[in-house]
Length: 135
Image (cartoon, rainbow, N blue to C red):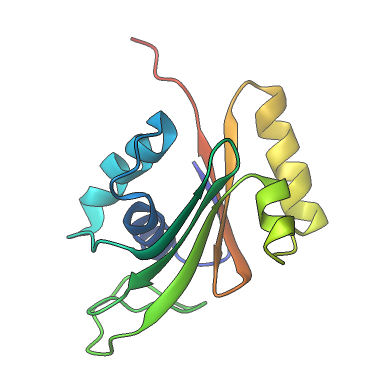
């Protein structure tokens, strides 16, 4: 489940690229989901903060990435700063989490889900909510 400001395809894809190679189970789950939206590019300048999140630079060749982003192809190649993690990780990196996003995250966490903030170029673009599958 996503709570997003950007298109879910674009946000999921960017998050997957940032988490590519992650050894964390949540990062691996995000990568698995993101592969549905196309080839994932290896991030550069990755910084992992155990228990808090990851910051990485992601190449966006062929993907439209903006607030109106539909995930549609684009010829432009841009490097985007992607931050994925908890609220304190975002605050530490200068990303403001709106009261609405904070409330939505708390509501999910009360239900036992994990809410992960996604920011691009310092702007909150979505919240990824992960929950366990009933197996």
